[in-house]
Length: 111
Image (tube, rainbow, N blue to C red; front, side, top):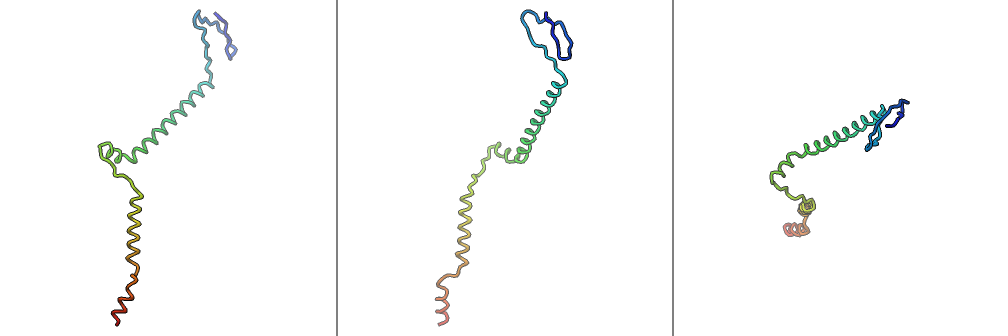
């Protein structure tokens, strides 16, 4: 048996027994507030994480189901598409230019 004095100036006779010489916790209002704030912070972080995951999945749910059903997406090759587009532009520019032999043709027709 041991006489223990607590923070509020009260004393109590405590029997820890022969094996356990544990520490008695005196949880005051500060400890309760720390616990409440900690729980609120972690619950808020959990809610934020779950809402972000939900928004990301909700935006792509059709694509996710399409892929999950075994369909394969076509490969995204932006460089090959750029090459095709540049060739089309070059062909249009080339066809819009006046050929060099046009004045020769007009000169023969005029003669």
